[in-house]
Length: 123
Ligand code: FES
Image (cartoon, rainbow, N blue to C red):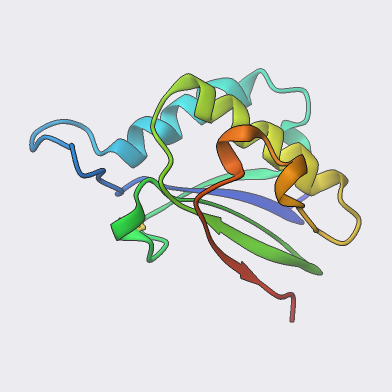
C-alpha cells in the first residue's frame, strides 16, 4: 500500500441529534466507509485511518484527506449514511488523482461541496 495518501474519519464525533448509549456517529460513518473500502479497487492507493478527534467537534461528523506534498482538507457536517461513505471514497480518488492536491469545490462529490472547515497548505 502506498502510505502517501490518507483518508481520516473521526470515530468520536457526535452529531447534535446523537443519543447517549448509541455508537458515536463518527464510528458509524467510519464503519460504513470501511465496509465500502474493503471492496474498493483503489484501496491500496490510500490508507483509511480512524482518528479520535480532528478538532471539528462542533461540526460533526468530520472527514479529512492528507498527503505528502499536497494540501490537507478537513470537512465537517457529514451525516453517517452510505451515500456519505461512497462520496468519501469518490473524494479520496479525486485527491489521489490530483497532481497538486487541489479539490475544486465544483468538482467535488456533491456531499463534499459544503462543510469545508480547513485547507491546510503543504509544508
Ligand atoms: S470528536 Fe470528531 S472532531 Fe472532535
